[in-house]
Amino acid sequence: MHHFFRRVARHGVVGTIKLLPTNLRYVARMLSPSAIAARRRDRDFDRRHGTITSGSIPLGAAEISGEISEHSVAHGLYYEPVPLGHFDEMMRVLPSELSNFLFIDYGSGRGRALLLASHYPFKEIIGIEFSQRLHRDAVLNLQKYRPPERICYNAKSLLLDATQFVPPPDPTVAFFNNPFDREVMSIVLQRIESVHRSQQSPVYIVYAHPYAESLLLLSAFWVRLGSGRLWSVFGRSSSSLPSGDSE
Ligand SMILES: C[S@@+](CC[C@H](N)C(=O)[O-])C[C@H]1O[C@@H](n2cnc3c(N)ncnc32)[C@H](O)[C@@H]1O
Picture: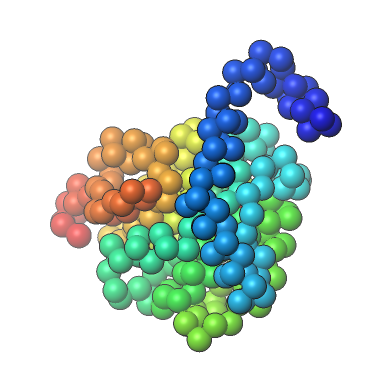
């Protein structure tokens, strides 16, 4: 009941009624057999590794304060870890030689994608997360996660608003698991493009639940290299390279 009144206070009576179909769709999705099976796999993963990566957490409960802009919070979406099966499927589109690449997870939450990326030989793995609570969990998870498949230990979570992060010009795999809407996504993409525009270095976007992918599809900078039911992978187009050379 308390939860209901908080909702009305936030969205108004009309807003709450308008949100009803969305909320019912969410509940139906959460109760579907595939979602229940996925949550069981998530819990098994955490039990096996002593980590805390499962759960669906609204930003209202995620302790966001300090330097984070209200605009970013308003356009951010809730926490949910990347589904276990999807990650390796998306990674198969990338080149196999990744040892000079950075892996940057924009909106890294509790760090599930950072842990899964550590099975690949990245030069460095960086998570960017604006929730103190989720960032704290990610730091602990990165310490605890030590399966034999892990080969990259140069990994960290940064407590930061993704719109404030200046990407390094190195070869990069930028990972997004539906962290924010089109508005924030376009700010972050512009930053990536402006850093890489003058460089020859390869940059890939691995995008799970790609709700804002029209931004990439319509941009001359990116070309889609592969896609699945709930993901897309983009690389830079030949016209994005400074000399006009092909990648
Ligand atoms: C769907 S979760 C994905 C978590 C993780 N990448 C994974 O796949 O396991 C999206 C995350 O983005 C974070 N987020 C949303 N907007 C953000 C912003 N502007 N800066 C940093 N983190 C943000 C949320 O707090 C949430 O933890």
